[in-house]
Image (cartoon, rainbow, N blue to C red; front, side):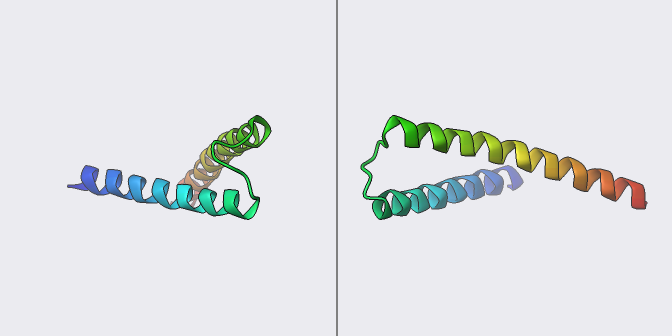
Length: 68
C-alpha cells in the first residue's frame, strides 16, 4: 500500500509541475515543445534541483545523527 501511495504522489506532483510549466509557457507566449534554449535551461534546472535536494537531505540526516 505504501508503494502505491508513493507512486500516486509522484504522479500527482509530476502532473502539478507539468501544469505549472504549461502556465509558464503560456505566460511567456512560448509554444510547446519549447525552443532549444528554453528546453536546455529547463533541463539544467531539473539537474540543479535534483542535486540540491540530495545535498539538503544529506545535511539533514547528518544533523539528526549528531543530536542523538
